Image (cartoon, rainbow over all chains, first blue to last red):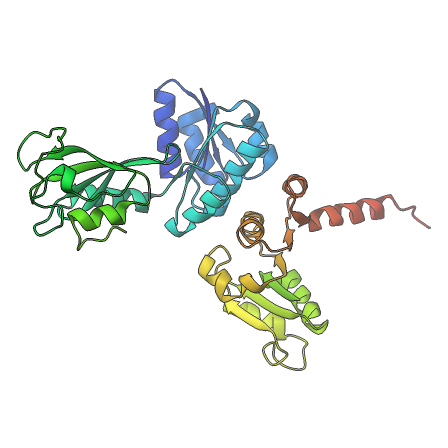
Length: 224
Length: 143
């Protein structure tokens, strides 16, 4: 696989190192002369000097035959432009963009640039997983398939607490696929399985149903 | 018409002033509050007294674009000093807000050409300068 990484900061340089270690062919593009010279000492021919948003720089780096272009500069507009020309002009099938400011994610989406990776969102996701009692955790998002799997803790007094699976009013397009009682092994529930406060449930759902589902299991915790 | 200008540098501020003088509603967005001085320069009244709008904000921030009135704009001009900012914001104006006329300054001739092919109205001052220089260079010298 031939990979072009644009942006030789901490993210880009470490990505390039790892990819090279995994025997991938890599060109890193860095526009700051001093940074470039420093990186060249280590990566030698695998780094090019230039503004990676300029077409001739990308062409010199061999974008026509790139299998993957990764734009990880510190500037979201640059990352958007790099990925856009990679996809639409050079027909590179796979791009990955770094989104520095999560508020700019909407622009990446609008212009069809993805996946866009935001460090802030990654950390927020980790907080969702790591901090107990936060309510709803997204275990898996499959945006193309329009499916999600979430994990929810059933709180005391919730409509679902103490009821059987068949009695719980779930919106169409959602299904309880697993029950994880506290401290015990999880299992696939039957219609007569009773859901108790403190249990965790895994639910597969169509995107957008989180709120309706949360109101059944943890009504005072509104997902963001 | 409502004309919105993003980037009040030499080009943006001059275009804004001539659009206002021609009787249009003009709203200018720039990240630098001091850029307002260019709008006042050489004018008998201040920009606001002349009927102009000015918003301080970053071009790519939706909140700033909304505050400057992007939803009412008929014409949208991107003239910041960054090609990539101009091209990104222009596409937001075109695709998200459906503004009928979006004009973008792109200094890099190659990107200007390619984005023009993709349907953006680009203006490349570098290309104009190259043409003028080239023809000036080739003019016969009279001694």
